[in-house]
Amino acid sequence: MACYPLQIAGLVLGFFGMVGTIATTLLPQWRVSAFIGSNIIIFERIWEGLWMNCIQQARVTLQCKFYDSLLALPPVLEAARALMCVAVALSFSALLIGISGMKQVQCTSTDERVKAYLLGASGVLFILTGIFVLIPVSWTAHIIIRDFYNPAIHAGQKRELGAALFLGWLTVAVLFIGGGLLCGFCYCNRKQRWPRYPAPARQEPCADKQRNVPVLRKTSTSYV
Image: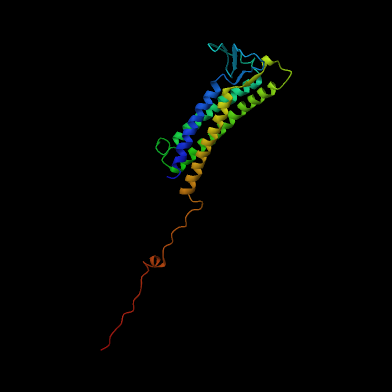
């Protein structure tokens, strides 16, 4: 019972991690336009995401366009797409497995050991989801920073870190914490309920073993 709050906290954080993973995948603010010059008046902002480009003009109108060709995309963007799609699928699967391992859900099994293993597997999947999110987010941030300080690239083509990248890093932290709590719940529950070595069998006392042994009593005879 003392480990039950770890289960609830882990599942709640896992749910927020799943929502953050989906939001990071869909948001177009992975790469945003950088303003390096001395011009204070900005008429246009450019957002570049995994699925679309958006242009905001004078903070009034916003126009977005999906990428026309899949094969014409750079390999970095294709790899980021694939990793984020896998992360979304893993987070959804981890949440379903974690809900199946709750004590109140009886559709899977009533054995507490099986439910603890389901929660542990859910925690591992959440941690794996965080790794799949961390790779494309950090990779994209590295490319943006490298190109920003490259003098060979024109100032109009340089980009800065977008809000989706920061949301991705926050999502990774939430997924790691939630997965760690679920794994901790599995270890705590296993330590409390299942001893490492089986308990020795109860031995019957010698008196019980000899209970059915017939006893011969010596009878005394009297002589007159």
